[in-house]
Image 1 (cartoon, one colour):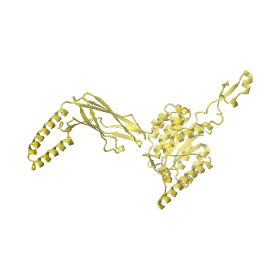
Image 2: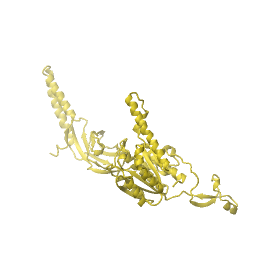
Image 3: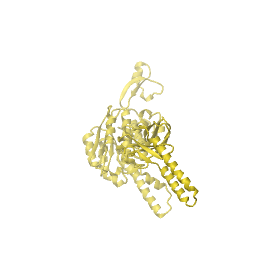
Image 4: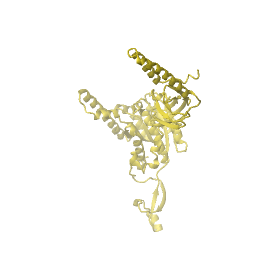
Length: 443
């Protein structure tokens, strides 16, 4: 029974059988075909036995291994590698079916490849997860057949393996702070003109061509009889908190990812930038309750703590409680901090319901509210209206888009900073805002 368990008859055998049946049927009208049909049966059986012996004689004729990363990056392409070794003395044709995680809902995954004798071949394919969590792989099934292709033998490898999907850590390489000044144009980051100087004095040094003449220290210049300038350094160790709304307003999807996952990915990147700037990075999430709190610190393990906190953000998309958020900030964030709040407001009324809490938070902290443009509305607005219904839909879409701009003005009226952005530009726009705040010394 074990011999026949991996035994599969290929479609070519049945096609040949159908052809022979047709020959027998035609032989009723053309007797000469009867002998040809009988000979065809004999040839088919001989080829079947020969093919069976070539494929099934010997052990471990095919060796394979699936190589997966330790963790997936959410929203990015992740490479899966398959290493296959052919120990047959002949060329074999392989049909590879990998049991990929159910989250991808791919039910027709199949790779066809031929490998010559004693050769090792490496294949690869990409998977792009759209939600965080555990992704379970099944077996790697390989069906090997010869060029005759009448029978196939199944080889099974790689017991089930679990790969966790974390927030998009691949974006960290793209937005490394070391490249911000050199390649800012390539990444979409803006150069922000620094206004004034930090109040944190560092030292008095000799004047070098290009130094700001306004920083000349005339007393030190008179004493040393040469130009001396004051040197200032950026203020450091300032707390920066990313607060993620995981309520129902963040459930809206865009290119497979929810707004919540875009906010999570942006939080990971901005936290890395904050730490590179020698500030303290922290985070928390909220809806009905306050969860996933990581206190703003600057230590070697901080990025790992934030990564784990973001990975564990789970929600049922309840209505968000801004009053509970304000109470938690009042109790636990005692130092003046930069707060990047990722949420979404579709109408001015939805903002007005939460505006008292936002104003209260902004009294003690520098608050930046990050919310999203509805890209579907923008597409609808740009389309040409040809019917009365399309005109009506376009007017409604323009009304909602206009309310987004009203929300920005309403927040600005109370001294609350805001970022109105599209999901794909969220990370870039957030970094630009942070760098602008640092350059202007607003915190």
